Length: 334
Image (cartoon, rainbow, N blue to C red):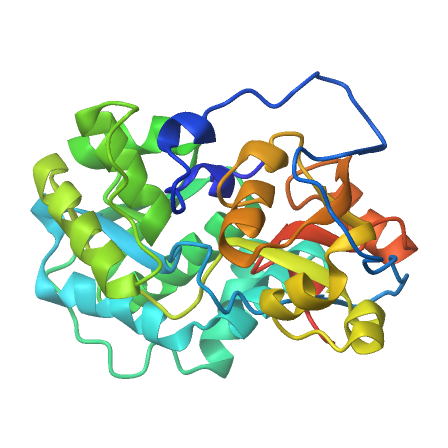
């Protein structure tokens, strides 16, 4: 179970946070259910295929969930931050996808995958020694976080620290430990962490502070972090956020590269959108697709959030487009 809830980050246009928290309909519904927004036109029937591709979010529906190191402010010296920033500089989304494939598909351990990546990318080259001491790197309860924590381990060890990687659990558990200094470093996600700190400090109805623009998100994140005693390093270009995938065969048949292409060519009754039960009401899922892109699917298939059910529905040709996570190892091309 992923510790992040991509669907709950931010809001879009006239859709308010209250709408984001709206109920998701009857539990246990299955198959395809007609969404509230009607669809006219023929649409695009699903096309089965083994390879999945992500459609470019050309109108920036999603916020910027770039990987970023979070550090307890008391240990955030320049050498430690510089070592963590080496990891950020080495990562981009295709490399993160490959790392996730190594663990989730090829069944390597997060430690082994991180070591191979570090060697191939010269991760420790040029890292300056810090003052040393013991550092606990926390990891969330999903494999991507654990692999990123192992990369931080490698970089910090090269900087002269004695490092222990500890799996903590979800953000509600590890963020207080980070504030207290019980753990000192955690790999984080810029927009999601910004909203977590924002709502923790200002209440669940706080105005969102994250943005589709990375600089604005990181500025807000650092401001919220200062209040909590958490310092943030440099964000990587690697992102793990909501994305919409189709099979390569589907994209080729209908000549699709962007979500705008999908909206222009595939709004209509034959198009099946797959995602978690809450997707129709969420501003980063179906509601946002309607609001930002004017994309109207003919039916909605209530499955899971970027999990095996949605990916299987795409591959077997029972869904046209589905919600995935942008760094999923299933998106690797080889």
